[in-house]
Length: 280
Image (cartoon, rainbow, N blue to C red; front, side, top):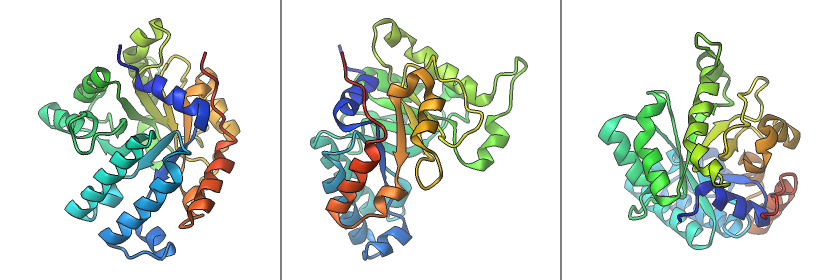
């Protein structure tokens, strides 16, 4: 039986803690690290991050946009970064936020989750705002290969509230509807006492988050650290799903670069606030 992405995450968290660290090589950070703002700087930034995170972090999240901006050379660096991280036993979620319909969505699914793809990752972020059902190709491939999908549900950016807090006739918010749909896909795994493959993105700074108790999947939580979210916020929002809640920390850790040992120390200090739970 193929191991689910949720169970892979729990295994990783049991020894590395519940932390997701972003690789976000935006222009100002490249300059702060003394690197050129080009594909060579991107490659060196990524190499340093791999050295610092591959054996210390449960989940690493390269931000695809910062690679895509350099075209084919950037994607080549991304391929190498994903591949090296995974070879060293680190789980990788590619933050691509893809969302489309039909054969186009199937193409995105293949690019990010098919084991034969050069961009093959353990998980990918997707947007459901062309309809949750439009994402079915990525859900199918995730189930087939034990890969993960993080669906944007209740994001931490303030503009999102105008859309995501809207409710249907029964008073259920769009964010909650997305969580409920993900939970339904994970339900068969719950019956087998396994965490599912379908996760959600929920901001750690939200004051009125969706209820996550029935999800049975991973929760990616941006907004921790520099944006104000705390360990208490993460566990309060996640509730009885806190063992599957993975705060995304980028700025606070990456600010300690480019020294690898400083980056590793920042990971260790931050992860201590989000311990994993021993697997039975």
